Image (cartoon, rainbow, N blue to C red; front, top):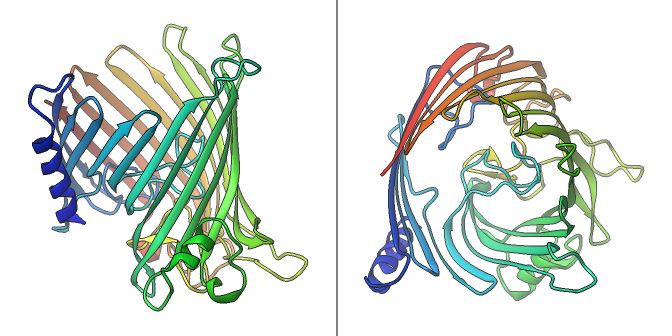
Length: 403
C-alpha cells in the first residue's frame, strides 16, 4: 500500500499537463509533543506516542487531488496514513488511499467509524448531488460513499477486509439523516468471492456459508434550528448484531450544541453522551461486551477500536465550551465523565477491570496566516492498564506550517 500511494502521487504529477488550469501545490509540516498519554487527547497521528511528526505534499488540479503524507512517531514507526489519490467527474469521486473517516453528525466521534484507529487502506466511490425536484426545496441534497479495504490485526492478528456504506439525505436545510453500514469479511480461511461480497454489501449474513461476516449498521439524525436560535441536536444508533437483515442490539450516541457566531466572542457549547453497553435480548442474544466484538473478527485496526474511543461496555458524558477570543486565538474546555469496562471483563482492550472518573482538557490554539500552534493541559483521573495510561496531569504542544 505504501508503494501504491507513492505510485499514484507520481502518476498525478506526471499525467496532468503543466498548463492545466487551477493547479495548486501545498506543502505542510506538523510536529507534536505529549508529556503523558491520555485517552481523550487526539492528535493527527495515533494517541500513544509522545512525539509525532507529519509531512504532507498535496497537489490539486481541476478534477484530480492527491496527497502524500509521511508520518513518523517516537517509536521509530513510519506510515503513509492520509495519503490518497482521487479523481472527480460530475457527481462522482473515485479514490484510493488511507483516508480518515468520521461517520456521524458528531464533530467529536462516531459509534461505527471514527478517527480513533488508523484509517484502513481503501478504494472508494463518493456520489453527491442535489435532488433537483420542484416539489422539494432547492437545497435538498444527498450523498453516498462506498469503500472497501483492509484492516490489520482484526482476524486472528491478520488482515481482513472492511466494506462500508454511508448515505446522507438532507430534505430541507438544517435537517440531515444518515444510514450507515460496515461489514468485516474475507481474510485467511474465508471466502472473498462474489457471493461473499454480495452478502457483505446487502444480504443476510446470519446463516449459510457467509455467516462469518460481521455487520454493523444503523442510522443518525441531525437538526439545526433556524438561525435565530443557533441550536443543533444530533444522534446515532448502531446495531452490533443482525436480525432478519436489520440491525439489532444497539449502542447510542446523542448530543446537542449551541453555537453563536454573532456575539463579541463567538462561542460553542455542547453536551454529548455515548453508551456502548448492550443488554441481553429476550431471545438470549447479545449481552455485555457485544459491541465491537465478534466470534470471527475484532472491530479494530492495528489494535484500536474503529468506533468510539471508550470501546465496548463503556459510557461517556461530555461538556465542552469553546470560544474565539480574537481572530487568531481560540480556547476550549472539555470535561468528560467516563466509565470503562463496566462489566469487569478481563478481555477488554483498554482495562482489565472497571474504571471510572473524569478527563479534563484545556486547549488553546493560535493561528496566523499559514502557521498554527496548539497547547493542551489535561488530566485523567483513572488508570487503563491494557494501554498503559496512568492517572495524572499532562501537557501537549503541536504546531503546523503550511507552505
